[in-house]
Amino acid sequence: MAQKPAPNTPPERRARGFVAAAQLMAPQIRTAGEARGFAVARLLTHWAEIAGEDIAALCRPVKIGYGKGGLGATLCVLTTGAAAPLLQMQLPQLRERVNACYGYNAIARITLTQTAPTGFAEGQAEFAHAPKRSAPPAPAPDISAKAAATAAVVQDAELRTALERLARNVLSKAGKSEGKSI
Image (cartoon, rainbow, N blue to C red; front, side, top):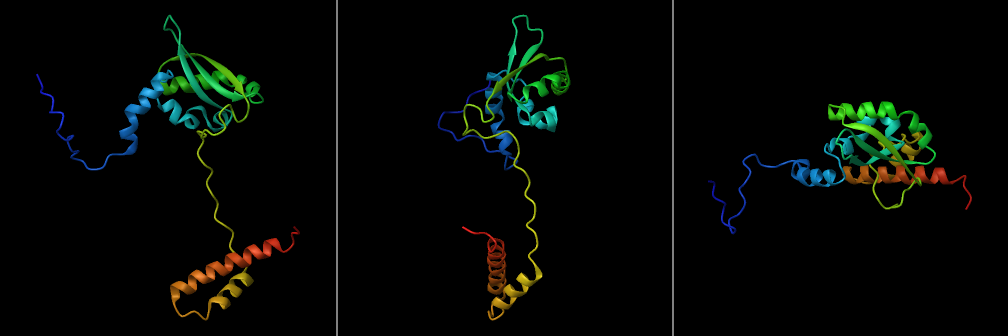
């Protein structure tokens, strides 16, 4: 029989060094997901890949309920009222995709739950990833020339570069607000 370490001994060190945060959080995520019926946490974390971008934009999974007989589960999906009819037509395809994630025919039915666009808890974070930012447009050549002329008297190269960038930003903003009245 294996002996348990004494209560005051420090935990064993990992021989491999750092461990990914996802690996450290896996037991807690699995426990929270299983409490809502999700045996496969991948269904929650990779919803957009499983359901497809078009369906994932309309809904998100909320709960999986298992019947008394144990034959097939019911996936409850949250959506807005306006998107519900569109989603209702796509339920067979969604069921096939979710079952492909499980690897067998785990989900027998999908039910829709409708709510307001923001839901009951507006402060909660969305599951969707933030959109990627595009690079700002290049400033006009005359603005770049004015910014370079403004910072030309400075001797230090790093300071001159920073002042040119500041001048470009100020001149670009000033050009945008000239036509606006307050």
